[in-house]
Length: 150
Image (cartoon, rainbow, N blue to C red):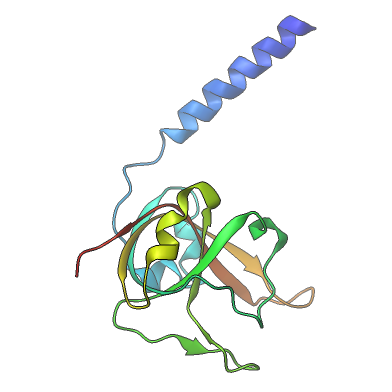
C-alpha cells in the first residue's frame, strides 16, 4: 500500500511539473482587456504581465469579497491614465481588484495613488448575486509586482 502511495505521489509530481511547463513565458497584455469579463478566461491558466496604475491598498467597504481572498492582500489598480469608478450604491471610488499573497505584498504599502506598476499573474472570476445570475467580477491573482519608473 505504501509503495502504491509513493508511486501515485511521484506520478502527481510529474504531471504537475509537465503541466507547469505548458505555459510560455509571461507576456504583456493590456490591463483593460485582461480585466474584461469577455477575455478573463483567456488569462486564467498561464501568467501574463499587465501594466497598471495603483489606486488603493484598501478594500472597499461596500464590497463583499469571496472567502478565497481572506488570506490574501487585496489592492486596487486602474488602467494607466484612467480614473477609479464610483460604486453604484455607495458612490465609493474603486478600481479593479488585485490579490497577492501576504509574503509578496510589501511593496503595496509603499505605493502612492497614481504610481505605475508591472504585475504578473493570472485572472479568476467570481459570479455575483443570486443563483442563475450571469454577472461576474474579474480578479487578478498577482504572483509578483514591481514599481515602474515614470
